[in-house]
Image (cartoon, rainbow, N blue to C red; front, top):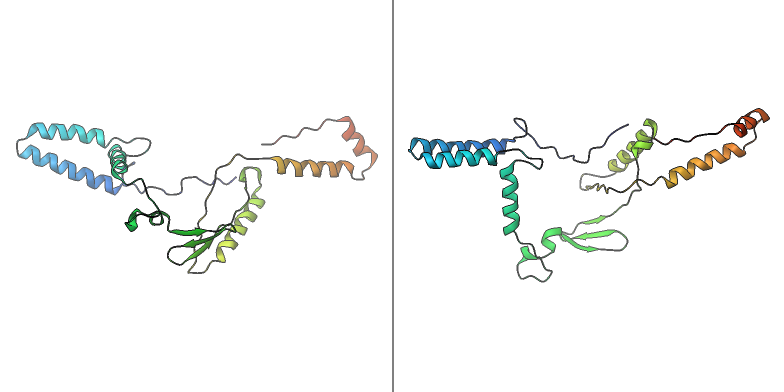
Length: 201
């Protein structure tokens, strides 16, 4: 079975979970600590050293100092946008770039471009064999090949619970078709005498 990861944007790291940006920030902090030591300001150097150790601790969401920095940015960021704001950067259009969304799925952008929303039914690779997986991938690849150099497509995956109603309905229709088909008496006798179990993995 092929597994499609949810997180496709992988962070480029230089050492363990630290990126090049984290290393540059650490070098700047260590340079300030070194200057404080050479200047004889030991209290500032010790406080900054302890703070640096805490700030560069890795967490589940990232490095601690980057999380705190993002929270501070969010506190001071503008959170209210209106359609009739005097400044252009405070209007709703500056966030989305959308001019209009029509009922038929057409999207008008502010820069003159147009788009369309195409809904694709749910697929679960977990209940498909390799052949069906290759067929689904080939269909998607052929659809993307239809785009020319001036077009682009964004794929949005929505997590929803898996419904096996259609799958089980088709399966039971096939079983009933086999059951009602013309067979010799020996096979029908085996079906009548034995119990069949259906297991979905």
